[in-house]
Length: 314
Image 1 (cartoon, rainbow, N blue to C red):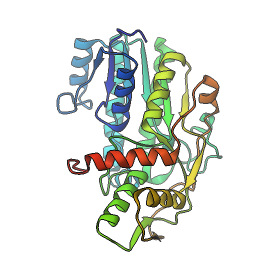
Image 2: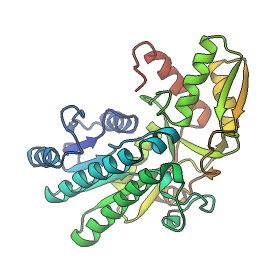
Image 3: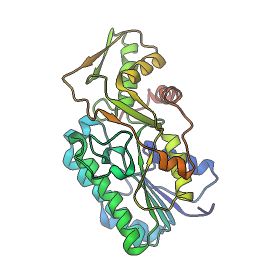
C-alpha cells in the first residue's frame, strides 16, 4: 500500500480493527477512514452504498462483525448469521462497485469442520459438519470467503481472506455472557481475587485444546498480507501452538494472582475437542507471530486493569 493511500477499516472500534488501526498508524499511514456504528450502520445497504460512493477508499480491511463466545453464538443464532452476512455483502459489493484496489476479509477458525484433522489446513474447509453451537456464524464467514473468491473469479478483484485463530488482547470484550473464553477467564479470576472467593468455576471439562493469537500480532499479519499476498481461498493466521483450557486457566490464575481453586462444570459444553491451525501457508508466505501466550495474557490483563473503572464490559 502506498503511504498516502486511502484506507478504510470497517470495525475500527473492535479489538481487531483497533489493532489494525494502531499498526497502520505506527507504519506511518495517515489517510485512514473510520466510522463508528452509530454513524454508519454496515447492515444498511443504502448507507454503505452512500459511504463508499462519497469516500472511495483504495484499500479495505473488513474487520467488522458480530462476534461472541459459545453462549452468544448459540443464543443469538439468527442475529449472528443475518448481521454478518449483511455486513459482508454490503462492504464486498460496494468495494467492487467503487474500484477498491484490494480488500482483506477477516473470518474465523470456526469455519472448519468440528472434527477436522489437526492441525487444521485451509483445504479442510467444507469437508465435514460444523460445530453446532456457532454454525450460523461460521456459515456467514464461509459465505464471505466464497464471495471474495467469486468476485476475484468473475471481476478480477484482488480480495483475500484471512482466518485467524482465537484472538485476545487490547480492547477485548469482557462481557460476562457474550465474551470469548480467555477474556471471560480474565474477568472471572480478577473478580474472584477481588472478592476473596475460594473457587473459580470453568465451563466444561478443561480438556479441549485451543490456539490463541494476540490481536496486535494478527494486525501485523494483516499488514504483511495486504502488501505481499494475492491468492484466492483462505489463509490461516495463528501461532501453530495450542494449549488446553485447563492449562490456560492455570496461566490466567497465576498472572492475576488468584490463590483459590479451579473447578470444572461438566454440565456445560466443551465445544470442539481441539482447534489448532496449520499455519504453514502463512509461515511460507513470510510471517510468524512474536507474542507468546503468557506474555500476551499479561499485556491483556494490564489493559483490563487500566480500563476496569470505565469499561462497561460490552
